[in-house]
Image (cartoon, rainbow, N blue to C red; front, side, top):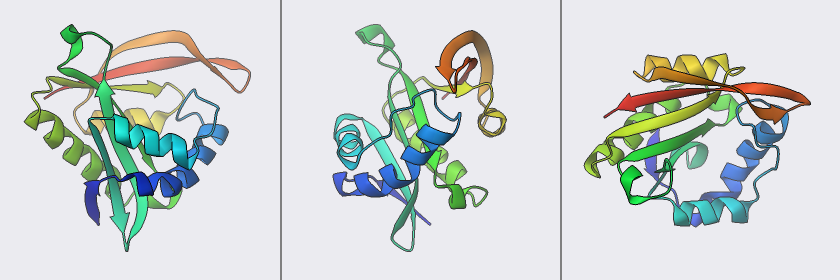
Length: 158
């Protein structure tokens, strides 16, 4: 497995496994699929966008950006990590997060945040296993599949 910086050419591969998860699961409250162009724009705009690849196939990504606007938040980032369904359980998620945390530390990031749907128990457990602490639950802030969902905020100080 290789962890490397994403290029705009990775947009189509990422959109191919991300969009079905956007539409069909609770890993995100978003319900609008991502196009290859949407992903390519994100890759260009973010300070960190890494992919995991096996045999030249992109199987997952992690990205982060500033948690909130304004200079006072410049050392606090929120990340997104998504794996292709077949890539889960193979260590790609852990490898991506380790690489993202190293990248963040090198840029004097103080903490990383994860916003995880409370219905995504695997996502909460994954972050906890990496040392993220649950610091808040925001009740009924997301809406998807005709129901309200809670958001679990998790933080890791680097």
